[in-house]
Image (cartoon, rainbow, N blue to C red; front, side, top):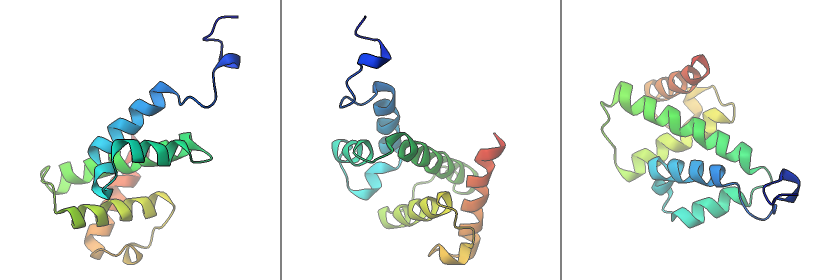
Length: 122
């Protein structure tokens, strides 16, 4: 059988498409956590369900972009402020809907929730 047969793919080798998605996520939001691309890749690939982690981070990244486009005119905030936004989006992706529990002003949390929920409409 050819080496590209799915039954013969080395499971220790990450899917190149998944790696490309991880690189794109890191470029936009992953670097805010002071992780190199390699550290970020490793943390996601070693997860028991890397595809689920990449899907979660893709949603966080898309909502982060939407928030910056819609509410910040694409302006980037300080490192700490960006980390707080991303952490709030991770919490939202995990199901937190009470914006008072996000550690941000309620209006900011509401906007982030709207951006995240807007992804489902696309």
